[in-house]
Length: 117
Image 1 (cartoon, rainbow, N blue to C red):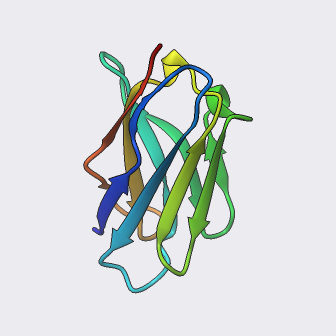
Image 2: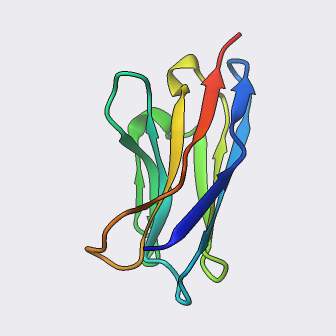
């Protein structure tokens, strides 16, 4: 497994923007998959957006057109740009990575995103 460190959560008003960043360590090679999951109170953890080294993008329909994921494959980092945030986006956001297809998931510690007026 790799180590993942997230930054960038916080409190924002509806319609605002936040940028989440995640830096991986412990892998000399580009990680096969990096991305973001979230978990709201009382709900299961769900994928938000992930991107693989062969450019397969998995993104939940609820955030399409509002969130953008980008990766620096050489540095093993990933950024989630979140625009037009809604109260329903409130959750703990977790960075996720897999070293190769079928690998175990590695997780960051989570960062709180709260969208409220």
